[in-house]
Image (cartoon, rainbow, N blue to C red; front, side, top):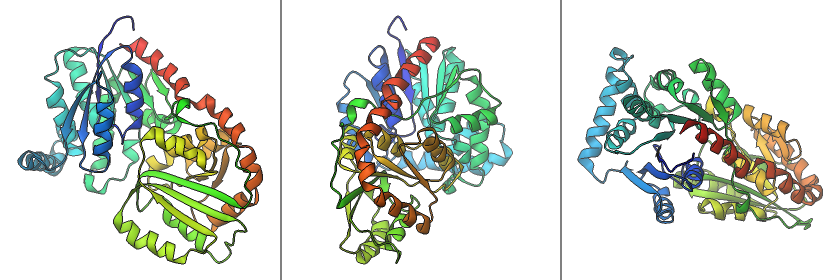
Amino acid sequence: MNSRKNILFLTVSNLPTNPRLLKEIDLISKTHIITVVLWKLRNWSDKINKQLIQDRPHINFITLDASRNKLLQWFIWALIEKISRIIYPLSKSSLLINSLAHTRRSIQILNTIKNIKEIDGIIAHNLGALFPAYYISKKRQIPFIYDIEDYDAGIKVPQGGKYYKKYTEFLLKRCAQSANALTSASTLIGKYTLDLIGGHTNHHVILNSFPTSEFFEPKTNSEKSTIRFVWFSQTISFGRGLEQLFESFCLPNFNPNIKVHLTIIGNLDEDFNRKIIKPFQSRLTKIITLNISPPLPQNKLHKELSKYDIGLALEIGKDLNNKLAVSNKIIAYTQAGLYVLATNTMAQRHFIKDHPNIGIVSSSSPHDLSLIIKKIISNNTKIKANQLNRYKAAHKLSWENEATKLINIWNSTF
C-alpha cells in the first residue's frame, strides 16, 4: 500500500457492538482515507457509538438509522423486508430478494454507497454487508474483502423467518466466493464457511484479540480468603449461561470455604433482573456476593479485568455458530492473565487445548459447573500465583500480531 486509497467499511451494526470493525478502522486509517457506513441502533450502544465517532475526526462516518425516528421510512423498509420473505419461495435465485429477506439494512447500505464517488476497495463486516460489497465490487471493478465474523448459516434467528438459513447460505455461496480475500474470526467458523461455499484460495484466520496496551500487568493477589469471578457481555440476559452459573452457586453441596465475589458487567435486561437475578440474590449466603456493573468502553473494561482472578466464558452452545465461535470474552480474559472457566463448546474446547495453562473446561450443567468451581477454589493460591505468567504468555495472542497479518492481506488486495 504505497499511496493513500479510499477504503469503504460496511457493517449492519455499530462500533461498540462490532469491536472487530473498530480495531480494523483504527489500524487502516493510519495510512488510508476511510469511510465507514454504520447504524444507529436505538439501544445502549448509541451513546458509546457517538463518543467513539467523535474521538475519530479523521474518519468519515455515515450513520444510517435503524430506529423508528423516521416512522414512515422505517415502515416502508420493514414492509419491503416482510414482502420479500413472503415471495422468497418464488424468487429463490434472486440476489436482491435474498438480501432483502435476510435484512433490509443490506439494500439500505447499497443505496447509500452507490452515491460515494471515490472507492478503491471495500471491507464488509457481517453478512448483511456482503451483497452491497459484492455488487459495488462488480459494478466498479474494485476489490473487496469479506470478514466472516460468524457462521451465519448456523445462527438461530427466529424473527428472520422460516427460510433464514436458506438466505444466508445462498448469499454466502453467491457472493463470498467472489471476494478477493476472506478473513474469519475463528478456525472453525472459517472451516465451516469454506466447506459451504466450496473453498477459497485466499482465506485467513484473524482472532478477535486486543492491543496489549489495553491490559494492566496484574499484581499477584495473594489474598487466600477471597476469590473474584467476572463475566461480561453487551447484555446481561437469558441464554448466556448465567442461569446455570447462578444455580451452581445455590446447590446444597456448594459450600466454599472462602469468600466468592461474582461481578457481571453489561446492560441489564430488566426482565432477566426480575426473573433470574433477584431470586438468585435472595438465595445467596453471606459467603457469596454479586455485583452488577453497567457496560464499559472496551479499553476501560480490559483494565477493569485486572481486578479479578477467574474469567467466566459461559457459552451454552445455543446454536452452531455459538459452538464454533471464539468469543471476545475468552480472549480478553486470557490477555488479562485471568484463569478461564470455559463451557464445553467446540471452539472453546479447542482454545483451551491449544493454550492448556490458561484455564479449564466444564459442561454447562449446574452440577458440573459447581464441581469445577469448587476445584478452582481449592487451587486458589496456585491460580493467583500464576496470573503474571499467564498474562505474559498471552502476548502472542495480541492484536499487534493479528494486525500484522491484516496489513499483509490489505497490501496484497488494495
